[in-house]
Length: 485
Image (cartoon, rainbow, N blue to C red; front, side, top):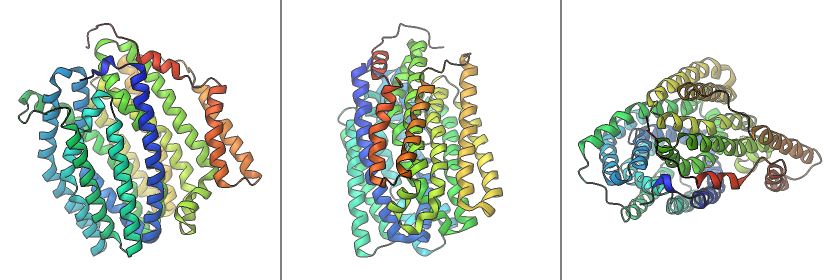
């Protein structure tokens, strides 16, 4: 296999580019399909659909419980034991699947307000066992060869889009959509698992040491991830329960737009996470330099998105979902602001895991959960879905600030130099002001997006906020041996 610590800059840059290209295509298709689902179900029906998806998403998390990231960390550091670590991953996910399905079933019965909603949830839960095979995507992540997972992702999006069109044309509802999503998800997970097994043969009987180590490290990581997932999605359940399905539909619609944008941090960290983990064991200075550049690229993606959302939120929401969802537009810039912190959270959470502070992730998750739940319960009854959006922003800001403090304290780091961050902020600000000016003179929505796509890269290059050569050069470095601890 290709050791993560020896990946060249050209290899890593190409891998990131492939992911971004594929995820952008999937983002566009996903937003269109989500809009079609919303138009098919209406605001109240879409509120039910969004809520049951959250329940199933929470149940699905119990089948993985953070063990994938732990296996990536260990297999990147010990590539000669890859088959053992991946075998441990599959065994643990199999053991977790049955209780996860049971938990999901109970949750669906509790939140379901109609027979259709309950049936949809039960059907969606049937996909969970197939997620075990889908976890073999770590094989490609470890090799920094993520082209095939992107092909599978695109296949999933295309099949799901076709299924939604069929359901819409035939007049189907929640149950039909759930059946279609389950079939599509099971099919693509099987394709990905079959392809991965051609590259590696996981041990059918992994060593007890590997299973225990993955479980030992994975428990705090899993608990922390569950807490993060809960505080990130419980607002949808609270809005549904307190403010009703209509408000839940409005909130779920704009939240889905921001959720699709997670391709930015996911693409970057899928490639860099195993490299950072491998660098920690041989060259911590390199790890910190890669982390700094990752911070700058995450800022480029998230701040640019925030600038665009501030100007086109109304037009985008109405275009996608129709006038029925126009009231939801005001929450989009707020959620885009929270996305800035979410992007940085992908990096800081990974750093805590790499440096062995996985238990701190539980503390961070608890902080986020307490703040988010209390804030939503106090504010949503009077503020509706807008209160939920503001609480998401507040929670993410506090969580990321806390993790940054923990990393700096553990590594005994001073305040880092600003680097290119001021230039990135200036480029995003200039983009927002420019779009505001064009919007004020009546430039149509489509041309505003074209202007943003053309102007932002030029602003970044012109202000010297972007330098791909530095990232390539850094990834081409070879670390010198050094004690890991």
